[in-house]
Image 1 (spheres, helix red, strand yellow):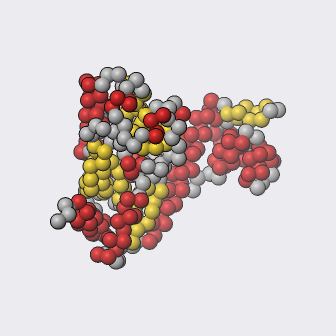
Image 2: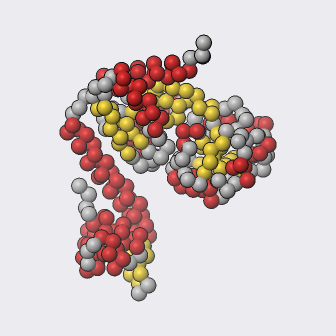
Image 3: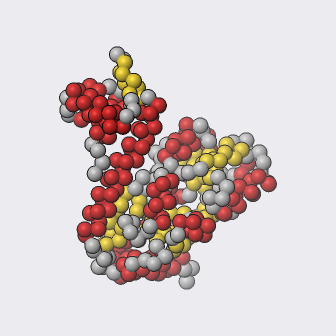
Length: 303
């Protein structure tokens, strides 16, 4: 397990005061100071500037603050993985869920899956949407997480060493602040994007996004493309704070309470489906086959 002094350090950094941290942790200020002193002694660095007005992080403290959060989350995830391993239940399918991989779509299908395979059960496994987690989880599907629902392309699957069941092509949309003038529209025209900042994932993340980028550069140069490198909450906050537009898909509706996702008149889409190991367990294979059957009946034309 991780050193619980990390919790005290995070609390003190967030509170800016030993006494306020002590109140939040229900311990004495002296206990907080002793833990921080021990932590600094073990690390051999000073984490805080101590002033009469409170605490501020040193440069070393700022660096350690980010790593401490990761260590705490990793330890918690390790505990969940250990408990999952103890269950050793071949019929339990572990569904990974995060900010950018919402699981509601799959949960909506679960009653139909259960009709066919009543022995299957699911377990939600929450994870932080970080580049490190994305690489580790997708490269090791089947170990601690079996299924992740999300957008993808062939290049990403190859890099991550996983495969996917494509369920549909979802339209590439724009996320806008609910206070943005365009938020009142039902569909955006390309003319609406003229002169505006459009946040787009960097090149080589997805060939489908690159196709959209090339289309805009060639035919709509008046749209200002702003690159970013990874989808996380900060990117959604930036979109809202800067009154910009952000590439999104309908499945992300509700990720940020102050953003609205709107379709655009272009013909650009991206695959959405279930990502899984190239060698899925029998239970996961049953799920994949059943979901594929359910989706095929949904998209059949009405007679």
